[in-house]
Amino acid sequence: MEITADVLRGILDAYPYEVVFVDRTHTVRWLNRAAKRRYGDVVRVGNSLFNCHNERTCPKIEEFLRRADEGEDEMFETYNGGTGEREFFVPVRDAEGAVIGYFERHEVPWTKERAEEPVGDYWTRHAEDAAK
Image (cartoon, rainbow, N blue to C red; front, side):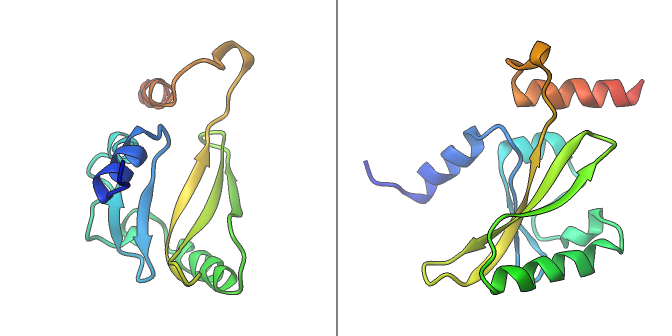
């Protein structure tokens, strides 16, 4: 089997965590299925990532890019007390190792009682709980 763009897209769409790939200009270039489900129309291909972040985010992301250019890989960003997630900045590199973009990785909080709950169901439940 040849690993084509369609195969890679299928793999990323099967991944239950959201992937929003952003280039170095902070332009959203691609979302996987989980990201589309979670963010809906808030995050759109072709728009700046900063359309859905506050003004304090830009300097933080620029600092992560600087650190990535110096060779760091995944970096802890923050603990989101509202969702209970840990968030990480993940640089994406080309074949020569240059940073071409990034995505943010979220870890959802699991309890022993919900350990088998699929990630998509977690987000649906979380959104429903927040709407109450």
